[in-house]
Image 1 (cartoon, helix red, strand yellow):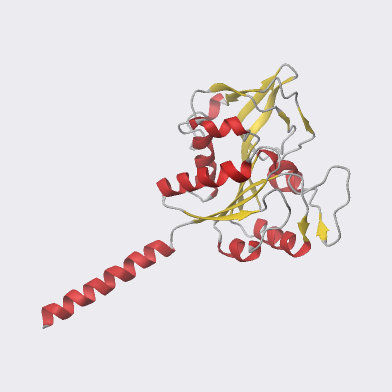
Image 2: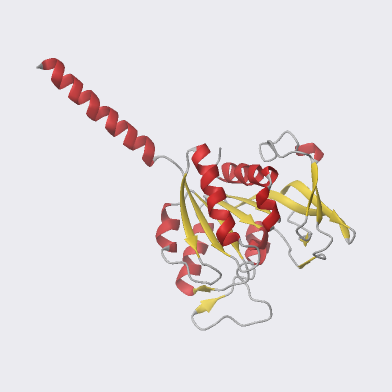
Length: 250
């Protein structure tokens, strides 16, 4: 009888231990709404694949090309890091307020490609009930997006030699490669940013592509990569994995 009680108690303790371990898995929130690079289709499965390998949970907030993200405040309240891939939209005021609270919370943030101009319309006012966040790139990512190069030239990407041993560039090989995505003019970036990749084309060279910085206590990472074809490469997948892991403090 005593042996039976011990076994039951052990089983209950084990179940509680497993549950506790599950609840400690980091939550990666993905905020995606893109009408240009098919990120709504391509990003969630890639993040879920990475998360499965790394023991993370994932919550996807789909805008599907629009500017409404149901459940955003609730998900951000639980998230350990947030991956943003949005393009030229404005958010309802309550959702933008929730996003700003998150950005100041000291957790993680990863921006991909169009996130640098994600929350501002081009030469348009925000619709009623919505707001722009034009300073998001400058103040949070530490970038200075002001246009992009010709689409037909693409971007020649190079890892910064002094950072090749960093966790950000782990398995991001080869050290130089060509992306057919146009080169984003992001320079200059903030002086406190740590640069990991640069890009060049016939129109320019040594343009910042991938970097990290601290916004207050929030660990912020950004890469201008994220064209459709980038998603087909192991290079990009490994880079995104590393940026998310870094933003989580791993």
